[in-house]
Each structure stands twice: as structure tokens, then as C-alpha cells.
Amino acid sequence: MADALASLSFQVLVIGSRSSGKSSFVRAAWNESSDHAAGEESADGVQIRKVTSLYSTFSTVVDFLEMPAEDRYVPLLPHFGGSAACIALVVNIADPHGHTDLCNRLAALGAPAPCGLLVVQGSLPASAASGEERRRLEPLRDVAARWGLKFLRFESLEQMEKGRLLHAVCDLVLGDVPDGADPIHLVGRRVTRN
Image (cartoon, rainbow, N blue to C red; front, side):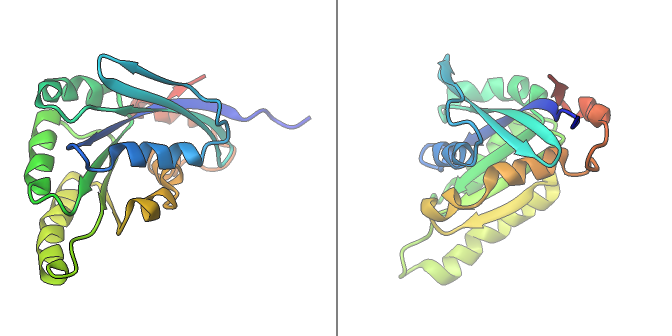
């Protein structure tokens, strides 16, 4: 008889300014899900989407917590970040204040999560694209390096939705567990066994 898959669950905190692409990020992860009947709810403005998937030898349940962009939610970031196994920061390259907003949210977050992604999406008008895009990307890459975040770049929301984001998150959180191994050491990374 085959061994049952280990069932693991964890949270991903999704942070970004208004129109950064947070909802598209969560939708892209949900589209990879093995169970499209998974739940969605809202609690005090925080959107929660439960996504299930098979990853390696694990059955995973991932709760994506999408934080609202309003400043009044910024003081809650340390609370939610403190329980998340992964943070996903989403920035729209077309937002001239994207880097500043990202830095403010990271400062409010305090200590980094065990792992995270910095997802930069969108494009600039063709007239300003080349030099301006490079100028905006460089400080974002620096932030990713300083915080130990995996840097992902997508030219459009459509490209992001094909980006295998759920797999990227699972790689970060669960990727160093050998196939068939006991994932007990993940408990310290805010992963629970179901």
C-alpha cells in the first residue's frame, strides 16, 4: 500500500500598494491549485484565499492573506508577517512611488519572514521605458538582495498569471525537504502538519 502524502499548511502574506497586482498574484497561484473549490473569505478587509496543491511528496494547503493597501492596515503587518511562512511583496513598475511604498511596508513589517518573493510587474510607456525602467528596477533588486527575497519580474499581469507562482512559493517554503523525508524541521518556519 502506498504511503499517504504528508499534509502541510502555511500562510503567505501578500503586500503591496493599490493597483500593484496583489489580487492578480493570488489569482495566479489559485489557478495552479489542484482544488478550485478551495475557499475564499474576507475578514476586516483582509482577503484570504485557501489554495491546495500537490508539491513533491506533500499535499499542501496555502492560505494567501492579501493585505489591503490602505495605510491604516500597515500597523497590522508585524502581526500577520509574524505568522506567515512566506511574504510576497508585489510592486507595479509603473508606480513612481513603488520603491518608497515597498520600503515603508518592509520597515513596518519589522523582521523578515523565513522566506519571501519580490514580484515586480507591469511596464512603462514605450517613450520612457528603457532608461526609466532600469532606474526603477535597480533599487528594487537591491531591496530584494538586502531582505533575502527571490526577485521575479513580469512585463504584464497576463505574464504573471502564467508564472507558476504557487510552485515558486512552495519551492521557497518546502524546497529543501528531500522527497519522502519527514518535514518536521519546517515547524520552525511556520509550517504546520495537518
